[in-house]
Structure formats: structure tokens, C-alpha cells
Image (cartoon, rainbow, N blue to C red; front, side, top):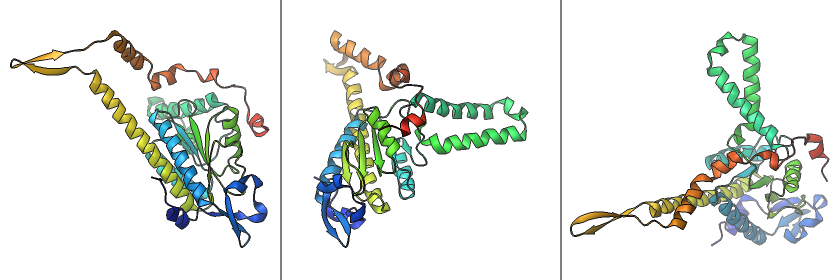
Length: 298
């Protein structure tokens, strides 16, 4: 069963594209017709693409990995902050910091700086600072919180990016392509779908359209997380010893298989969190990458 219905997309205005003179020819396969000088998106193809993207995002969340949502345009900021924040996924809604993916260790240092400031505020040394110094530090903390506060839990590179308006977020697209990170994106008729792994042809300017598609993706993430929780509970039950009744007495029966025991120990020692701690970003990224290098990518 499709996750969205044709009427829902129609009511949300997902089918409205841009003016004909502003179109990108690469979007021709997703355009249904032209009306009054405006391109109309084929919603039948949009439904198929939404289902494909939702299923892929569900599998990512089921595996315990993160999807980074990027939407800095004013129509999408509040929507992404509310809906994506509710499912505990990282997002960028203010400004894309150059080098966020290609120079990830530097971004992590800035995030750690926030926790350092928080510790300082709680420490007795905070009272010894002057008013001017306190003001400078709190302003710096607020600035970091505004830009990086939503990615505090992102301890390693995301498994995928979901982008609203690839034209506006072109730097994020280039960084993800450079690192071979899968890209999910809402692509309007004025944008280029080439290089996007999961294209969702849709109106990326209307808040209702953005709200509908983001909501579908968040529901897919919830489904993936709930499936992951069920699988974990099932594994825990299988590992526990069970009791049987024999001649009115309870005997605890433990079935121990060496191979199973080895697999269990391996899972405990190499959980996602532990791997994230052991894996150094230096193996994946170049610390010398600058914002200019990102902007000049081709």
C-alpha cells in the first residue's frame, strides 16, 4: 500500500513546478504537462519515488544509523526542526557550515566546545570571570548552539542526507557526493536531479508540500526504529535461560552453544556506539579541507 495518496499530494500542491523558462531539461521525465506557463509535476511518479525513499530510510534507521536532514529555507526550517527533532535525527535548519562533512573532525571540535563551556559555567571559576568575559562566552555558546545544536548527537558521518531544495543546498550536495554519501532530496523542476540517489520530484517551495513529504520520511524512521527495538527485545529473550516444570520442580535449563556465545560476545564488544568511539574520523576525512575547497568542487 502506498504511503501517500494522490489526493493528499494534490491538496498539498506538490504538483506545482516553476515557470517554463526556469526549468531544468534534466527534469523532463518527471514533468506531466505545462499549464499557463507553469510546469506540472507527474504525481504518479512522485508517489513511486516517495515510497522508494521512505523504504530506504526505514532500512537505514532500522540499522541504527543516522539520516541528516538539511533544510535552511524559511518555509522548511520550523517543519524540519519539529518533525525531525521528534524522531531524534540530526538536522541543519539555520546555515550549512562549510566543510561539515568533508572536514567533520573540526565540526566535532566545535560541538565539544559547547560542552566545555557548559562545564565552565557550572564550575566555581565562572564566578571569578568579569561580566565582559561572561558575556563573550555566553554569546559564543549561543552562536554554536544555533548552528550546531541540532547535530550534537551526530558522532560520526551520517549514513545519508535528506535535502529540501538541492539548488539552495548545493554545497551540502557536493560534500555528500565527494564522500559517496547517499542523497535523498525533494527536487523541483528548476533543479538538476543528476547525482541524487533518491529523487523525489515535488514542489520544494510550498510549506504544505514540504510538511507532507517530511512527515512521510519521519514516519518511515519511526517504523524502522520500532522494528529495531522489537528485534533487540527478541534477541534478549532468546539469550535468557528458560524454566521448565518436571515432577513438580522447576529446573533451569541453559542451552549454551559455543558459536552462539562467541557471536553474542562479539555483538556486545562491537556495538554501534563503541564502533563510533573507536573509529577515528581521520581515516575518512582530510583535516586540511577548507571551505574554499568545497565551494570550488566541480
